[in-house]
Amino acid sequence: MQMAPQTISIDFHTTRVLPLPEPDVFIHTSDGTRIPAHTSILASASPVLENKIDRPRKHRSSERIIQIHGVPSDAVTAFVSFLYSSRCAEDEMDRYGMHLLALSHVYMVPQLKQRCIKGLAQRLTTENVVDVLQLARLCDAPDLHLRCMKLLTNHFVTVEETEGWKFLIKHDPWLELDILRFMDENETRKEKSRRHREEQGLYAQLSEAMECLEHICTEGCIDVGPYDVEVSGERKPCSRFSTCQGLQLLIRHFATCKRRMSGGCLRCKRMWQLFRLHSYICQQSDSCKVPLCRQIQLRMQQGKRKDDARWKLLARKVASAKVMSSLSLPKRKRDEEMRVTINNPGIRSFELQ
Image (tube, rainbow, N blue to C red; front, side):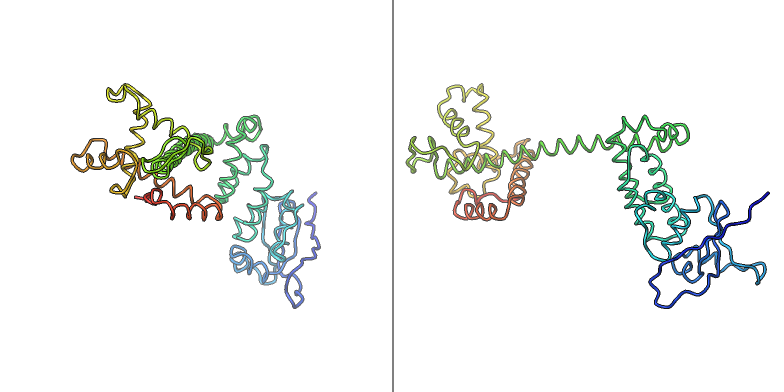
């Protein structure tokens, strides 16, 4: 014996000033529930429902009916309630979030769709991520899709044990392939990002070494300085540059090493590379006090060397690292360094190529 459809009574909240007339349309759900509604509200909230309402009826006397099947009747009730009030309770999102996302996509209700995307993103777990991912793909929700992909990638070992993943690999191999490809690309991005950070760290260290070299050769420091500046070994350790003491030791070694001319000393080779890098950056070679700066620049002008392009590229990256480092400093520290730059002709020579 077939049971008669059950008509539920709903107290819909709206922002309308005038009271609503009697319902003139009924929404039928999968279990036979009838939800009374108003064509004016439904048509203004959803172009899809408006199209259904405008379809001609077989008999003028027959009541208007809209079928919404495939989801629980309570989810349909929550959907219709949102069309009236533009509100969705948290408990409704907890129970029917996925159903409401599907309904908002099918019936083109963008405000509810955004609410569901945000709500589902907050409720993602390793247990439901596969189901939400499939729904996000079907409902054209790229932000939610990306959130699912990231969670799945970060907790793949746990997700692999869920029923959702086991069902996926049996029935949707293309989505499985997309997930595995995303995970592989994510690892590639991480590796590239790690290498980029290491390179930037190296350029920042070289930038500090260039500043420190000019500081030593222009102002003088504890043990090393220009011939016209008196250097006292009793001065306190330099606090401006972490590399200052090591660079002074390297300069002193370079000045006295007997193996330098034969090219057999690695420490001298490193010092020579720092002098050469400085010469590619320096814009004041006529007044520069860094040793060999003028000589190296003259040699560069006299004949092109095969590795000139690589050194110029390195010089640009080192100069760029200095600019980026200064921009990342707090404003007070940046202003202090700017004052030092203005008062120091050696540091002023750094320019972004």
